Length: 447
Ligand SMILES: [Fe+2]
Ligand SMILES: [Fe+2]
Image (cartoon, rainbow, N blue to C red; front, side, top):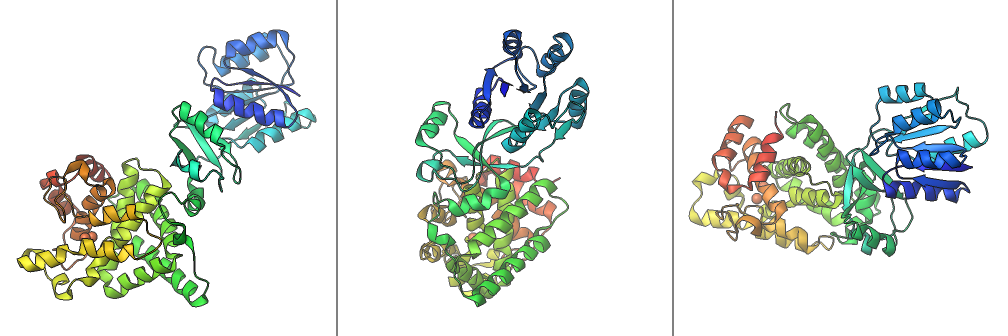
């Protein structure tokens, strides 16, 4: 079949043309409605696939011209990133054969085209395809340099509503294509949120691969699933608040669950989590709480990378594990009643957390930095190194805010338990201690 593909976005057009050509179609491309009309003036085509939002003559005006003014009887498929039921109905009434929303599935398009070719699809049988909106997580392009074969579908983002699949699961992203993206200043590619688990499992960018080696003994598996279930329940019971931005909360809990499952598939991480739980229920709840809140703040701050979110979860879940080396008497005392010596011992938990985690082969060094720095304050009044501003790792700057909030709002022997309003007041009173953007985003998480 001879097919005219009209889209102002060249990447998208080329991709679609290549896929159609692979199936033996003869493809003509147009970058605008005007260009399409010129082509239609001297070429007979069997089908048209067009975008709607284009500079100059819009897709709708073009369709009206083709069907009503030029009276060309040709099946038209519309692909749009700005799908609405109303728009789809209008287009179908106009005489369009099918409306497909972006990000589209190429198989659907090829199926429609083959139905048109075989005469199975007649103008009376109009079809609307709505692919459910899915959220995407971004992946740094550079991560494909070391890991070019993708275990998941990969997308490129054109605008908020437009993602185009550029790679199928199992295909390789060639270095030529990576270079081409670099030349176009494309820094990130995207995977669907539900593929985030596969992505993380296959990525060795920040975590050592041993992290995902799992043990095979049945008892461990049973304990593991019990552990995960318990964590999930705790996340829901302890952190749930009507005050939260529910959308961010729900998606963050999902991310945390997935990441926790991943982490606890590793025997050393599971063992460490068990140690935290048996050491103190308080510490266990605090760490889970920090992990969920930190994920919420990360997402609110626009951190969408799957690997970054996993890192945030690891730091949240294990940042205080070093407290198991601190005298229990100190841990059961209010901080305001500490002697200087007790202060010193208490504060050493950051280094202890690092030492414990550095023994785990799966944990790479760059996760230890935010763990060591999770009590550093933006104004240089924190510990252990009194670092200031940008010298503090971004994940540590994020954790400090949620760590202080959790200490006040989840039952904890070192601090007096308070409610949400008082905790927020406390944070805002000492705002110079926090990265201003982090504090602002954190405040915005609540209604
Ligand atoms: Fe801590
Ligand atoms: Fe903490």
